[in-house]
Image 1 (cartoon, rainbow, N blue to C red):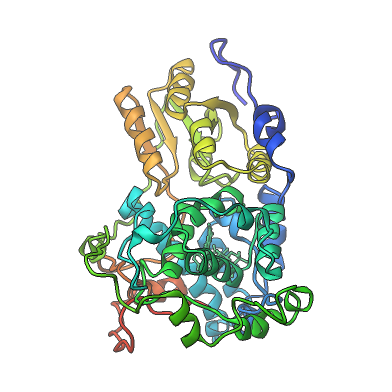
Image 2 (cartoon, rainbow, N blue to C red; image 1 turned 135 degrees about the vertical axis):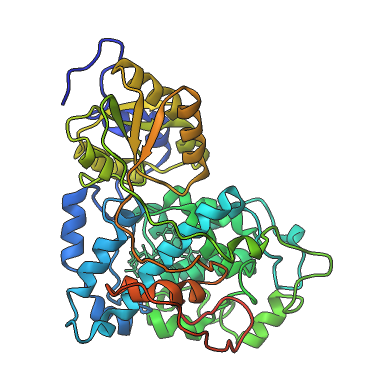
Length: 457
Ligand SMILES: Cc1cc2nc3c(=O)[nH]c(=O)nc-3n(C[C@H](O)[C@H](O)[C@H](O)COP(=O)(O)OP(=O)(O)OC[C@H]3O[C@@H](n4cnc5c(N)ncnc54)[C@H](O)[C@@H]3O)c2cc1C
């Protein structure tokens, strides 16, 4: 690594987050989640995926899900390389054997693209709730008994505990738990989404908030509900066997019709309610193939939390360049990021040739660039509005910002229609399977209004 200019504080790279974020480590009982951070751990997890069996059993709690989400979320692995690893499990003649897994990866690509377009609007109701209830009835207080796992329902309490202790939940559990929070407890989905972001190692406003909006019905034509029969089908009796409510008082032991009647006032939006998203803004999002910038002298590399890999394209472009990672104090506080997640990030950062600072990210990157006499900052793209604000601040300080993008997951010949996943998928699926991008296949008629539930569990 290049010699450190005297004007910079010592690197925090080897300082454990427990020493940097004392209050968080004092608050959280669990300091490590289900996955170790870093590229080595990620490659080990990638080596054992079973994307073929996944297609048959992924909805079951014991199914062959890959648990790669923290690595994808933090860019330790890219979607393109996970897709390639999945395709390697199927003969060239039958890539359809891993179709479901690749399609599921596409949900992340899709969510990130939507987030890049809508920005902070991701925290607002895209559409009104289709429960016949106004948004104002959903409480903004997150119930302590859900957070602490003391509701009395064995399934809910066990999931709450898993979330806090491991930082991971199976997709089906995320849906069940979100549905309980929003529909049974009438808590606004944003409260649940924040709770998840605090604890999940993969917590990300893109996939997370879209998942919550989908369950809540603020981005779907109807709310997502489940019942005891559905739980037992995919989880067996593991929760009900020890549940004090199993014989009397189980809130999920009912038909869907009875649950709808108990929980909702109807299947439409309440009169006068409206959402905040103009769907037209997602109808034709320009497809811009990423270009590779020219390498130039006088550069520092800024590595951020969306691409924490030794294969980071900006690091690869400037292998000798001074590089910096900054713990974003404000964001960690705003999201109340758990100790587990901080440990995961620290383990990723420790594998990188970076100088580690903390504080205001823009100010620290500017300080780092000036200390090295650099006039250009090379980094990798991020969909987050916070990233855009930091880039704007760097440019306002007279620095040029170069963006080095990772290989794309799928290409399109036309502007992307991001209003629903199925339309986006028609546009990119050929290329996602390694073929030349094709013109979108003709639409199949929809049977139901709104977002297709087919690709969700
Ligand atoms: C309420 C709710 C909240 C969610 N919050 C998050 C979140 O904060 N971060 C996150 O990465 N995912 C989130 N998801 C999506 C999904 O549940 C997780 O990505 C998945 O469960 C991660 O486990 P896995 O790696 O074993 O997934 P696998 O089933 O093995 O899938 C492989 C990868 O595909 C991607 N993927 C799969 N399903 C989805 C999906 N529905 N949406 C977006 N990407 C998907 C993920 O990157 C995942 O790692 C949420 C879903 C719901 C319903």
